[in-house]
Amino acid sequence: MQIFSYFLFLVIIGWVLFFIFLKIKNETPQDWQVDIASSATIQSYLLIKVIITSVLSLIILITLIYFRLYLAFIFK
Image (cartoon, rainbow, N blue to C red; front, top):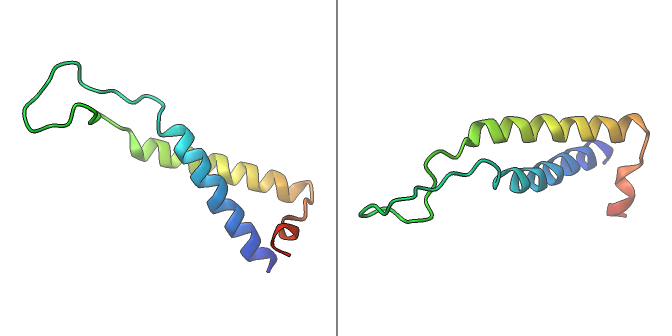
């Protein structure tokens, strides 16, 4: 149960951080183009954002485990 709790917290922390980092360095085109939405990004840097999110969520989870915070109490 504890390994599942760690995995679940990793996923939750990862999604929260990913949605936070999703808005950073988001470039939209200034000029209007045919057949392209005006809100479409030029370059979204998704791979970099996924890597940063994964590393940060692992660091947060390892910190929680290191300080022996009992994460499974939320699911009881």
